[in-house]
Image 1 (cartoon, rainbow, N blue to C red):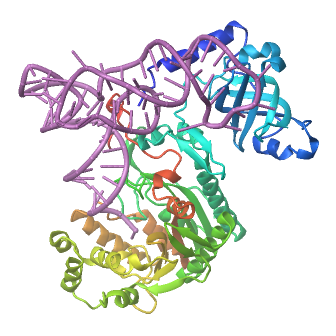
Image 2 (image 1 turned 135 degrees about the vertical axis):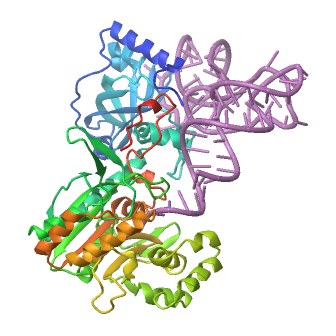
Image 3 (image 1 turned 30 degrees about the horizontal axis):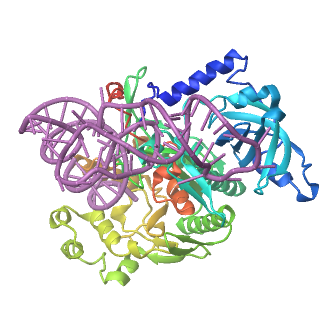
Length: 515
RNA sequence: GCGCCCAUAGCUCAGCCGGUAGAGCAAUCGCCUUUUAAGCGACAGGUCGCAGGUUCGAGCCCUGCUGGGCGCACCA
């Protein structure tokens, strides 16, 4: 990778051109350009019936291809809408020709001229006026594209190094315009969710990112320090506990879309900061939430992708509601015959070792963790089509309300699609004494070495003591949702600037303080 | 955290059994006024990720380090 401070001979050549431009009073960095058409609009403005006298258009964009033939130059200009060919002719441009000779690939230009169709058949701008808008002093790592007769586009060479693509995301997008489509869909997904909730009387709120205590999930936090207060603060791992405080306060229906932060490993499905959607609705239970999630997902898929059936990694997924519902206990029993509520832990452990899990790791499992492992090795892999898994054992869910029909269970569901969890919801626990007891249990696990167990949030318990109405709530991982909808297998591909180690070692000394 | 793999020109890559480094494209210069992976000719471009080691000799073998990818673990 080229160091940001070093210059290659290619860059020196561009700086030399910059100097030559300035010598003839052409500014390499203009202030604005009044365009009349986007590239795609200009192409639509062409009509073969007009013969050679097409409409005059002004377009602005980056030079994505440049083919000089001496006294003529063909180029392709690329803007947000696509690309259009430009035809520069020395006779036509007269004095401006000296600028054309100093253009490089990647420069931003504005051109105007009439449309015509070349001998080869491509609708092209017959450039009459050209302005340099921004000189590019560093060549983009672009490949060459070839459009085959059948319309397919083939890329020759190009930016393929994954490290360089994530580190220089700006170059990645500049060279791979099709990647931007993922983020258009991402924006539509979030806009749809917001409209969906607004329409149902939910209030969008913002709760603290910096928190004196963290909670609402099982995860290790990032820590930082407040100077004036002289105290450690945590970056939130979930929005849950603050949103439920707002339910106590009488807001009744609230939601938040924001970043959570978890200090854990990074891989294809985990980025240290990620986008979470959570909503809470007073006087609703988890079945009310389930029906809303179903409506949200099917509506979103229909609107953002057009249609309810989509192929993902070769599997046809059908988002037509209603989605299958299966209980955690019965689902596992159907798949492997185990009844996790009555089976002894030893039976569960031997099931796991039978599935190839290392005996040492299995021996360390107990309680909720053990049940979770059994689930992952039995029911979860079978959940390809959208499926709600309901009624998780109590040990797995310290913030969920006990099941009204079975005290061993909680009223909780998770939504799975294509083997991944998309949503996690419950009838919220609102008995303050029960909540305190479960926190205390978490603290014991914490003392026993589980760094991801909850802290005791006494202020939250106090809020519950004032009385939180029956409430249903849900958390939806937006990044994974976007991964599903755009068929991306890495979370990095749906995050604009995914987390990376700093380049080289020269930044290492400035690493942030650990709380 | 563990395992496997990768790092050579601006980009994409080759480099055999260890013998002082190569191609295409991009750049630069010349020719070319409807090309489109334009074409033809010329000329440049390298601390082979970094540091040690083995060797008469290392891009290639060994060790360590850095960065990255994949898998596992962690991750409700």
